[in-house]
Amino acid sequence: DAGITQSPRYKITETGRQVTLMCHQTWSHSYMFWYRQDLGHGLRLIYYSAAADITDKGEVPDGYVVSRSKTENFPLTLESATRSQTSVYFCASSPRDTLNYGYTFGSGTRLTVV
Amino acid sequence: AQSVTQLDSHVSVSEGTPVLLRCNYSSSYSPSLFWYVQHPNKGLQLLLKYTSAATLVKGINGFEAEFKKSETSFHLTKPSAHMSDAAEYFCVVSDLSSNYQLIWGAGTKLIIKP
Image 1: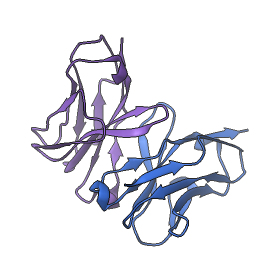
Image 2: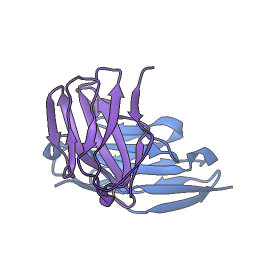
Image 3: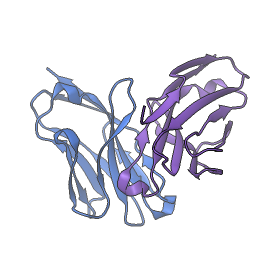
């Protein structure tokens, strides 16, 4: 199916465990993004990627790792999960002209760290 | 540095009455401005965008917003609210200083009373 898909939709993990959130898009968009959404903070950018093998930090990158070996995939890894990383995570993609086309978001992954 | 302030965390209106969601921004450059909508437990959808063309921007579902540079505002309006408009709305700004990354407001929850 065309679009941007995130998996899993829900995840519960324990403090200290490594967890990877997956994001896949079918449009060959250049840009991909990871955001976290917390009450009172709106969306905050974790990492973004302008193309395969090019990634850069956003506003809140600490504790997260990303990779982009293929244009269509942009996984986000929490190397050692903490309770403060309990959040809803959104992946987004955009063509090169991000301002005129805006971003397309996935449905989100609700992560709970216990 | 850019910033965006949504002046109301919650707005409650009766069905059939006008909607006004307020947004003020700060930008040193010519900004691009967006409104996104998020329905409960859903992803984010682009409602409308301003990118230096007409200052009155029309979006989906009857929403529109007016860019007022002198007031640094980009308020979202709709003449007549519908129950399906109940959602959270995010005002977003982007400009050269952020390398065109999106800066998000904290969101306004729109409540529609029957």
